[in-house]
Image (cartoon, rainbow, N blue to C red; front, side, top):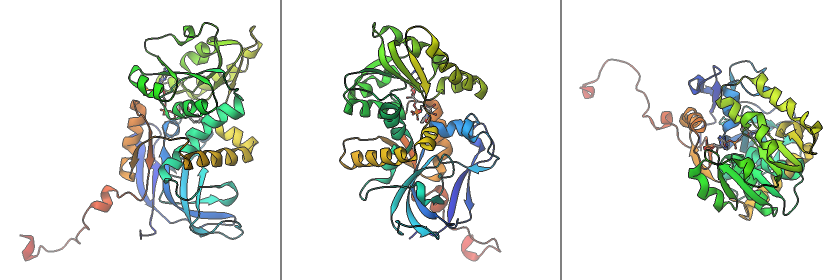
Length: 359
Ligand SMILES: NC(=O)c1ccc[n+]([C@@H]2O[C@H](COP(=O)([O-])OP(=O)(O)OC[C@H]3O[C@@H](n4cnc5c(N)ncnc54)[C@H](OP(=O)(O)O)[C@@H]3O)[C@@H](O)[C@H]2O)c1
């Protein structure tokens, strides 16, 4: 059994991945109403890049250093006072925004979702942010109807793939913008690919789309709004294009505010911004219900999330670089049980006089 030793990924400096550091940390103790988990899996995703670059409104007020890690699947190894309904050994999941790129952490018991026995921890972790976002965009924000024509931007990305897979289950007719190299993947997911470098998505469907999901925000979402039919709905949920163009957080917040003014334009089109955290704050029961539904779909293999690689602590900074470079076909998931370089190194000998055998 592994030593109960804690290790965490800290942001020391905002900016490049060089500002990340893997350090030993004290083992936390579960307080009142909390459990402690041994972390089995915690995804590393584009939103962590935003947090690291200090471009994420929800963590803008955080003081350095702090521990990264937006989601967690873990096994309870300690119960705090006042916790009912959970036992040591139960597998649980939560969306934590920060703090889960760790070997151990504490969590509030009243926020936990249960992870069914037999699920792969890394696959389960991919569902917590990316797939719950996709599920809620479809069924809680856009309330899609079977047969609707829907455009998904960034369709080869983590949320994009989930939107296509869940959209197909919901009986939608789907198009997905992606790099040309990802056309086969988009087709495999049941959608018509649109190469965002060569094709103009506003001209693909002359009548316009019923719904557009946009986590990229090219031109401040303007073209996505243009691509809607009369009465159509734009659900924006990210601004990767602004980040790539080195825009400041204020500019991106203005893009989001402007979406709500467009509803006054002629044509009856609507636009809104979805945030998983805002929706969870308003409807906490939905979050648990939706995530547990996704765990159920995974258990029957009705959905098959892609894990690009399970990584050790050593590879988290490299994972951030890979996310920024793009081109990944699945998620990178930190699995603290995987040995790090440090674990593989032979124990250091105490310095002292060289013995005969050293020569
Ligand atoms: N609001 C919320 O609650 C919420 C929740 C989750 C995620 N998000 C946000 O949503 C965004 C996407 O997240 P993710 O985890 O899916 O990221 P991801 O895995 O990095 O996927 C982004 C995808 O977009 C593609 N792309 C880049 N530029 C594009 C363009 N101009 N047109 C079409 N596709 C383009 C990339 O493809 P290439 O590889 O070709 O570059 C990549 O496949 C991020 O900004 C994230 O922070 C928001």
